[in-house]
Image (cartoon, rainbow, N blue to C red; front, side, top):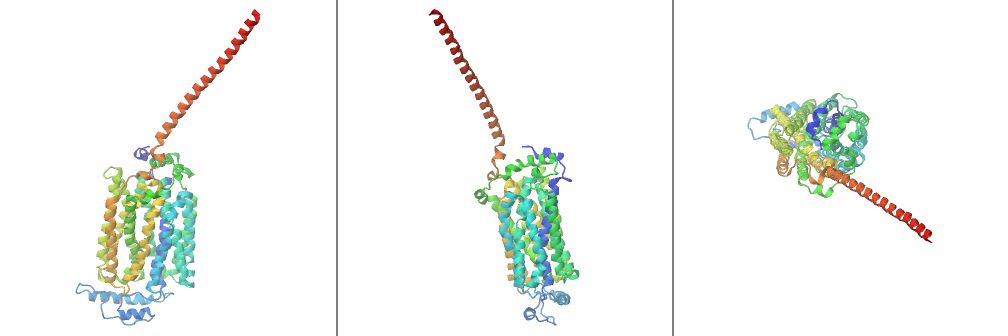
Length: 556
């Protein structure tokens, strides 16, 4: 096998086809998350009832459709700190007027209905993780992802019409959207197992998944503005623009990408050889490999990735689906501020995600840390940092908004470190089965997406700061568990069950084949000589016999 370090300087990354693919995956993840998250913001201006922290009497009035004209004199957010009641009351007074102005939404959906709508995406998303990885390995990630993203685009475009017809149609579309989007990560991992050289894996994968963070920035900020200034009653424009952007990406995806370097029409020979020699086998070999299901499902490093993903994504999905509501209910931001400030933590996450991949590969390339220790360092730092920040944010009230926003930014910045942790670890330990493996881990990681909105809805019936604190306790506890498990069981090198015969025995097989061919050739030559000699001897006998026969005849 050719050492990647020796080949790397000869094949620059700029304008290379592997990085062109990474750019397309970046925008693909951006589109996936835009269509996933847009409802989290749009639902704030779709629903008629205002969302404010009020006393229980006011709460009952609002849920029955009544408009409360008086502000309760009881502090809305009760904390243990003395002297904050007046500040928090001022916060509530500040937000009351803008909230009532938003009460002209089209739909009367209670908190439980909203939570189910946000969770329904993940009920579909969970079913196609493993099938998506298998289909990508069999038919190619390019085709599978492109077709499914077309379905996502049509589902998004149909959402405004469905919402105005019946809420059950929105349930169905969100389920279908999640079902089609579930193949996204497995398809990318299956393709990058064929495209990403060893010492570029962290950089390429962290760049690809940074698209999801950028999507959150754009969705939270632009969707909030579209709610106020967009067409079709504001919120409708969010879904129409998302769907159109999705269709544009699908067209470009099919034009510029290929499943493997061998199938790409515009890749240079040097880059193709560099990728294939770095990975260690040819794309044709990998396409023929059966999936070692038993070994994969009983592998401790695989389960370390599963637990790390579940714990990390629980915090991510909690904030992804409920951050606008937290900004509204606890920090008292009105809708335009809400969108911009909900986007800010994801901007920090995007920057840290991109940087973490660069730093991780530099540490590995220069030999400062092994791959295993690099993954553990980034993942454990990510999990513990998120736990500390999100618990701290729960103790911040609306009079300390800048500090709350800073803590949320720091929390998602720590989450960005996981891009160089468990996210890329799949390709380290099983590059040829990365699609199926990530399908398994992301299936488990989707469960938090199904549960988190429901937990938030159940724990925050009155929308108080104390209730949100309980939500964040759950997030922190799961994050700590994930850090411990990953720190014990994670690995960074190719696992024995993931190494196919073409990797381990290619040289031996070829040598044995050559020796056998030589032996067969020698044996065949000897046989030919024997046969030739055998043919000559009988002929000589035949020649002598007539001679003798002539002699006898002459004697007669």
